[in-house]
Length: 172
Image (cartoon, rainbow, N blue to C red; front, side, top):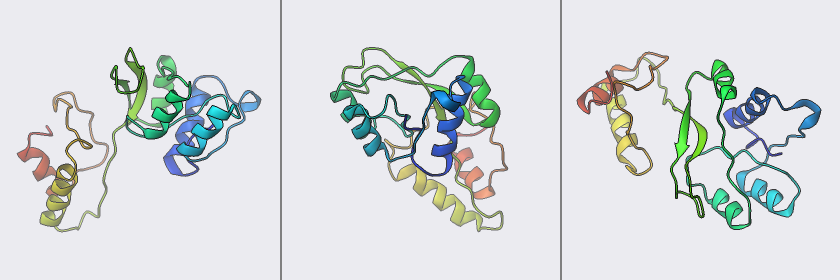
């Protein structure tokens, strides 16, 4: 089984995901390779499954599905156990039709990502960085979370970023 890319959160999250599902140890021989190589190995029958981390649609996943692979739901109490390690993790759905042949939504997990900067960084600079991040690719960076139901941020917001969020009613 491929547990993700061989770095940072990908490696750790893949291991913790299978452990939270009660599998691991001698039952799973995990390896860490790129998404592209994972799909190659999956389609050749060299591995049974791969964890692909990244926002859908992922081209390697599309390629895997064209080759006969299928998407699996990630759901249940295992996700609650996993959230003990990663409080920013949340349940998500991949909407029907995002991937070829996908006739129903697929339960999965997602993570809220944070951009972090020094507390003494200039407020206007941080405001502009935040604006540029959200405006650089509106399709890729969506704000479809209701601010009243948005997860709490676990670290203080920089005043420059907070100003951007307030102006766009993206925070409480």
